[in-house]
Length: 68
Image (tube, rainbow, N blue to C red; front, side, top):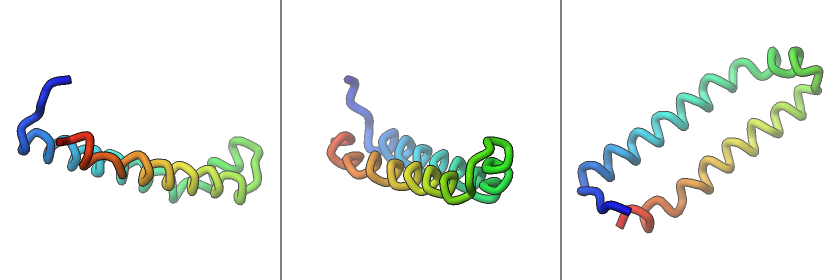
């Protein structure tokens, strides 16, 4: 795996946080529509949304160790 410069690492991490936030912010307001279209209860869709959010946070925890 190639070594990234500190600037490239910072740019990569900032991009990941931005994309993650963009994804989460676009799904949140549409939960009721997603529930209606999939035929699921809103609480089930909300649980999936929460699991996705927690997974994003957990996946980003090792970022400092991976970037060194």
